[in-house]
Length: 95
Image (cartoon, rainbow, N blue to C red):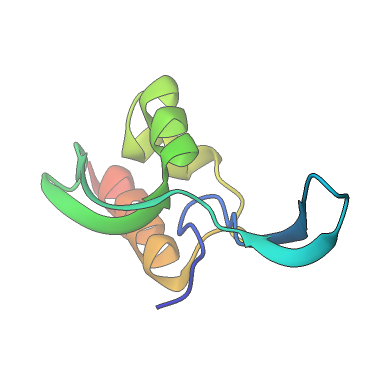
């Protein structure tokens, strides 16, 4: 399982551990990923995603999963999230 947010594309970054003696060793900064089930009002069901804590706040700020995916860029989304976005757009067009 990759350490990448399914909604924002946020992934690991690299940097240095710096000791008191100013010795530098490589390290990784990993995103704060959580397995969550977000409810879609259009689909009427939950969607399981692995997203960062920052993305979870963004989803709440934009008014839910449907609104977030409507504004999200396709190249940032994972294959699973892109599939859900297309399902929501199709269901909204039929309604």
